[in-house]
Length: 94
Image 1 (cartoon, rainbow, N blue to C red):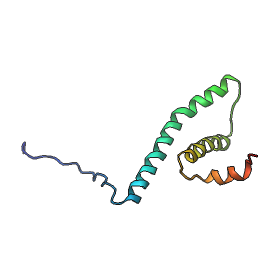
Image 2 (cartoon, rainbow, N blue to C red):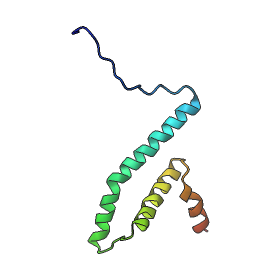
Image 3 (cartoon, rainbow, N blue to C red):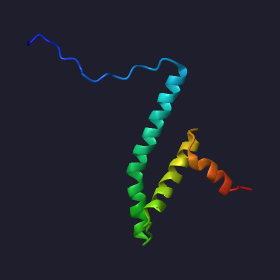
Image 4 (cartoon, one colour):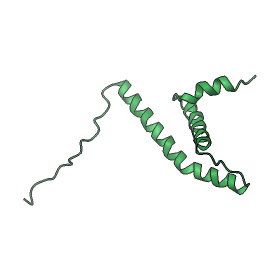
């Protein structure tokens, strides 16, 4: 039994089979990277606001702030987010 090689039981991701698959995988990776970055940045934002005695006490409001930041980042890297259309309607730059 010492000569038996144990192979992984989990199936590895197969490489993209088309350009669309590759672009979808890239977008998934970008979304994940933004989420991970925000998980690290948002607590610092909350702490910075607290230094000025400013607080966002309602979870829905805090969620809106996080989603707004995410939406802006996504727009910059050409990824759609539901808030982008709302932002376009609410904010008119002359």
